[in-house]
Length: 219
Length: 249
Ligand SMILES: Nc1ncnc2c1ncn2[C@@H]1O[C@H](COP(=O)(O)OP(=O)(O)OP(=O)(O)O)[C@@H](O)[C@H]1O
Ligand SMILES: [Mg+2]
Image 1 (cartoon, rainbow over the protein chains, first blue to last red):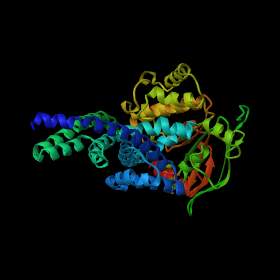
Image 2: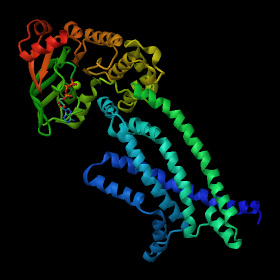
Image 3: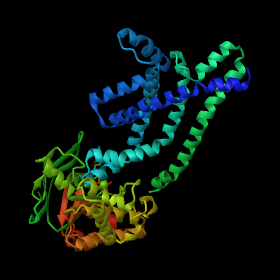
């Protein structure tokens, strides 16, 4: 099998890899935002509940969650498609990490920002949406881009629940033709080609926001 | 509603506040007529910031009452919110919103709280930026301005909400000396227009010139309250005497 054929074979899995990433973001972004804000805004028992949900998704092993949701839930009468399970598990796992970045970004803001909003008579929700979140999200954007890269790489696990992503295709090819070195080297390169532009974009974003932060610190 | 004919801007009665076991404000009583300028001074940690932050709801207190105009804070949520909105506050560290332009800093509350249309809010904001003498900075971001300019933006931002009372918490102590005057000039201008002002400041020149009452705090209590003339020439409380002594020498 030529390198070109290997590449074409792996490429057939690109669509699934991209779809899991995209659907994963559909879970990750709302989860990260809502739970990050909720953890920042709540206290007492409510905060405990929020934190527990975050920790469940963040601290469980993704591979086990995939198996549990894919193989065990049908036994309880709830059968989800492999794509849904994968997007949900990977998305909420990354979303758990993202929520911590959101919360940390909000907590890192000067207390005076909120107080200035209160002194002007702004409602709590306006302060959050117009003053706190815009600043926190910008400050944390390099972290979010790192997490996007983590998500792309984590999609390689979905082959375990029968999705034919790039990793699944590579495994298939290597079963037909026992020649793992070129096949897995090509796979490695394939993930790199997807992730590296994202990393470059992240660095560009970091450069764009850093001058603003430095100027802010100088105040 | 705060009535315009109210002649008492602020009445503080038997105000007590604790941080845990620490008694930070002790039986504070203070009456501030409308249109007067009060300067609060005292050693660090004496409770000056805490006191004025109690006036606009940034700090809760456990005992006593604060009345702004005719509204007793906490009695009625809607009236309390309105009274607070009509109380402007200027902070030591400016607390401008760094992600918004100077103009948007000034229009945010007009638009989100009062629901004012953009064009109207912007022309009002430009009017107040003109008043603090920085109309040309409207489209810049706070980080592009000097400290003195930033503090003047903060004053304009507060004035946009048409406050009946302005609170200043050491507005010039984060500024380089050459910028102090431009901020004090704006504050003096406000005082001359009849704005009711409560200023925590150690700028004794300003206090002498502008204040009609000096309030001296020590360890959470008001220990001396006098006209500037009396306060500077014949302070009675030993702590006030030594405070003035260290300040002037
Ligand atoms: N959140 C808080 N928790 C506990 N103690 C506090 C808190 N905020 C202030 N204090 C204490 O309350 C006292 C009064 O503080 P405050 O900031 O009102 O003093 P101040 O007169 O404004 O002093 P300065 O001139 O340094 O600004 C200080 O002893 C301070 O340590
Ligand atoms: Mg203070």
